[in-house]
Length: 112
Image (cartoon, rainbow, N blue to C red; front, side, top):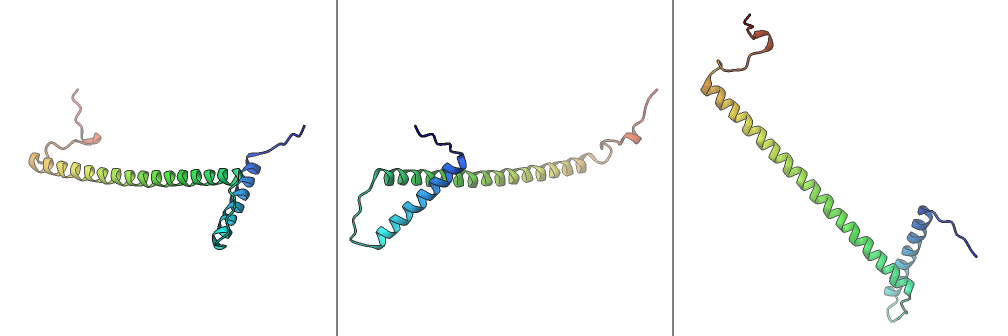
């Protein structure tokens, strides 16, 4: 009975090697027109893995773009809110005058 010990790295390296060989085989078949090769079970499995990996990468990229857009929108809304708050405070201070401004701690009168 054969026992193989594999690690994540060895599996990943082997898969990368198989994918590269498969891609090269497909390219060579496309270059040599007229050659019809049989597609093996390994070829179908590798093609499926490659397609799933590509779709996963596209999903990650679209999620990253959406996250960046959401952050930019949130920042824009925050800046708008800060601007409105400043305008409101300015308007209130102009109408009420400086009498109602909050006093600093050293200006507060203490009644005994």
